[in-house]
Amino acid sequence: MAFTRVIDAEDVQEGHPVLVVVGDIEVALFRVGNEYFALDDLCSHAEASLSEGDQYGHIIECPRHGGRFDIRTGKAKHFPAFSPVSAFPVKVEDGGLFVDVAG
Image (tube, rainbow, N blue to C red; front, side, top):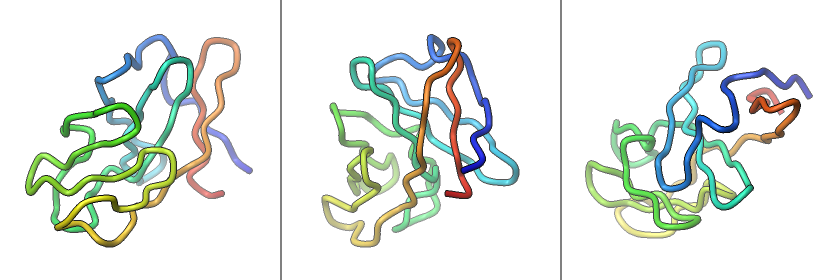
């Protein structure tokens, strides 16, 4: 796995997704309690940024048409989204948040 440091962990607040870029991939970061999650930022239903959506616990709602995804897995949970988005491994180390977009 090739983890890349993307942001200070404290800069990702629960309920407030953050957009980062890892290489050429836009990644949406999420926090629930002391857990962090990362998804491909582009909604699988329409070209919309998931990091601009509303987060409800482990669910992110796309701001364009209301499709919902599980931030733990990327699985589509609500119509009109039916295809998943990529979920990426995340780790916290020395106060930094690291994401592996290759794994």
